[in-house]
Each structure stands twice: as C-alpha cells, then as structure tokens.
Length: 342
Image (cartoon, rainbow, N blue to C red; front, side, top):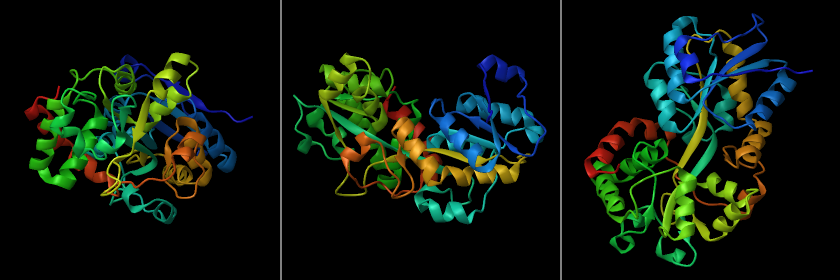
C-alpha cells in the first residue's frame, strides 16, 4: 500500500519550527505546498505509483513556507515549494529560495510563457482572470477587454477584490507590461472610479455580487465560477446561472493568465527526485488531475479538460512570460496605493 506523509501545520507551529517528519530514505521528496486542494493528493498518489518515490507534504500559506525555508537555511528538508500565482513564486525567488533547473522535459512540455527564464520556477496549471456580467443588466458585447472596466459608462457597476489580493496585483502587473506604468495607473484609477462598493471578500463574493445586482460586472478567477455552477447548494447554482463569463481581450493580446507553479528549493536534499517531481507535473497524467481537481486549465496542449471547461471552447491567452508578473509586482502595489484602491 502506498503511503504519504501529509503534515498541515498552523502558523504557530511554523514559527516554532515544529518537526517535519521524514525518513532518511532517498526514495522520497519533501514538498512544501501552499496549494490547499484535496485533489492534489491524486498528484502525489500517481507520482508514487509511477516512480516509487514517496511524497512528504507540508502545507501552509506561501509567506509562512518562505519564512520557514529561510529559517531552516541550508539544513531545510524542503525539496520543492509549490504555490499559486506568479507574484508569490516571484517573492520566493527574490528570497533566494529556488535553484535554477535545466530540464529537457520541462523545456519540451511547457510553453515559453510558463517557464522562468532561468528555470527558477515553472507554471503547471493555468488560471484565467475573467470578467463576469449580470445577464439581465449587461450586453456582453459592451465589454470585451479589461480596459473597458475603466470606461466611465460603467461607473458604480464593478465588483473587484482589494489591492492586497495577489490575483489583482498580477493583473495590474500585466497592465504595466502592456501599457506602461502611466497607462496602468490610468486604468487602475478608472476601475476605482467605477467600483460599486469598497473592495471586500474573495473572488466568489464578486461573482455573487454581480448575480444579486449589487454590481453588474465582476472580476474573478474562472474556477470560482465553476465551483458555483457545480455546487451542491441550489442557491449557488442559481446565482451562477444569473451571470455570464467573458474572456477579455480576444481581439488583442488575450486573457490574463496566472498559474499554479513550483520550483526546486536550493540545497534540496533529494535534488534529483525534486526535478523528477516537477517533470511529472508536466505529464499528461498530472495535467489531467489539475484540470479535473480544481477546474484549472492544463498548461500542456491536448490534455483533456473538465466538462465545463471543454464547453467553453478555446480562447486566446496572453502569452506574456509569467516571470514578468512578479517583476512588476512592486510597481503594481505602488500604483494601487496611489489611486486609493483599498
């Protein structure tokens, strides 16, 4: 029988350096993960089945895991750190957490946009930041781009999360890449002027706001919408039916994409196993698990998507290298502050 060590530690335990139990065996890999999806267990099971390498998992949020690895130093048992959003991966990179990896498998399997230029980290699942609209209030032909969210005709109609949300920081980072700092600031100011309410809640709350009529437009990652569509709660499903989804900028650069990603930790005690784990995450088997488990888009072309994602068909995606989202993060935060995006 296959076994996995799965250790979920509270913040206090991380601070005090609670033990991360591992075996001395070389046939293991120690994963520090900020992903909190039960379906990820399927990744670990299949990897072990295929390789015989046991996966030991420690979970925490991204900043906690970064702090822990830094505190542990060169003695850290961490082999791989996995998290969501390029902004968080970039923060770990800036702290010197990751080692550059050269892998023909990753180079062949992953698109250029999903690979850090120096192999510090890689994107293995894709998240589209979409626009949602109230079907009774908005003609979807009126809003086809992120830029439209700043159009004065939508004053008082936009629901969107706070500026400290990493998803929004990465969206603004992409605007900096495409429009420059001045253009990005003008856009951010326009969105602030069009907000229906002060930013509050998570992505699901933005979609529910559009469904209830509190706002007519909302911005959220696509999979939150799928969760509502497939919820066991009838009211969630009814709310989801009241809104439609738009993949912005199809006539231009394409929809903003972020990632679930990972990198090999510097001084990884099981370095070869860590690289092998990353290569596995780019396999068809792993890509299908990402797609089925959290309705994320596969990174590798041709991999089967979940039924809902398949029903949406293909759409154009922004091919900006994900590392740029991290590089532009500090300026994005400063712009948010300047325009009063709370």
